[in-house]
Amino acid sequence: MGTTIIAFTAVILYGAGTLLQALRIRSDNQRAGWLAQFTGVLAVAAHLSFALRFMVLEGGVNLSVLVAGTAIAALLAALVLILSLRYPMQPLLLIAYPIALLSILVKLAFYTGPRIIDGSNLGVLLHVSLAITAFSLLALAAIQAVLLYFQHHHLKAHHNGFLVRALPPLETMEALLFGLIHTGVAILTLAIITGAIFVQDLFSQQLAHKTVFTLLAWLVFAALILGHQIRGWRGAVASRWTLAGCILLALGYFGSRLVIDVIL
Image 1: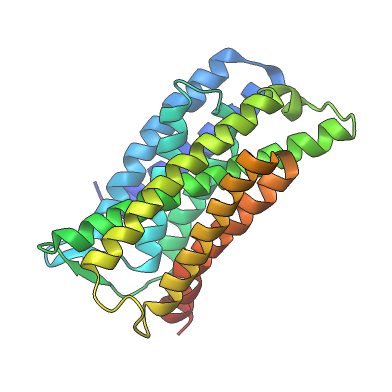
Image 2: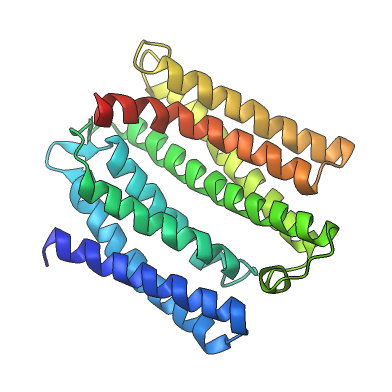
């Protein structure tokens, strides 16, 4: 099957899944919810096939900004689907699906030259795999933070719309958020350690911005964890810190790479 056909298959499936999930939340239609998840599984499978066609090359692994972006978006959608089997995270599909859909369309619309990592360099590949997994988990935490902020704001204002009613209790939302943050920060820590061991010249001109922003993001998330444990940070405060940390991570890689690979 051609790459373009696979891409648009994933786009259509993500669109259908988004509509089904919206119907599930709007009308409490259980069948629509199951269909939204099943459609998402098919969409993620097509999305991963699309991403791998650009990522896995004969000379190694291509990690140009748009290829990495579409792979992260696919992993993000996959994580929501997997975690929703055990935790009440189905509302996150309403954000994860459109992000994944847009990542495919952006990749089709723009071209970036390949950034090849030698396939025999297992240490660097381990570092990259950990970094992508950490970013996906923390991006998922950012989506959770947006929903938590929305829920906190509307409950405080005594607005009980259909989306607020569809979300789990506030305590459950906060527990899910910090579970994602703890896991994401643990993997990010491993990514930083493996980067220090296996990546040469972390503070070279091309990598300095990424290293600095990654370390700043780690400090933000670490401060949030300490603030939650010591001072009881939660709700809107936790949401803002989570979003700040995720923005720093995104700037570290996507900000500069977009300018270099796409604009320039």
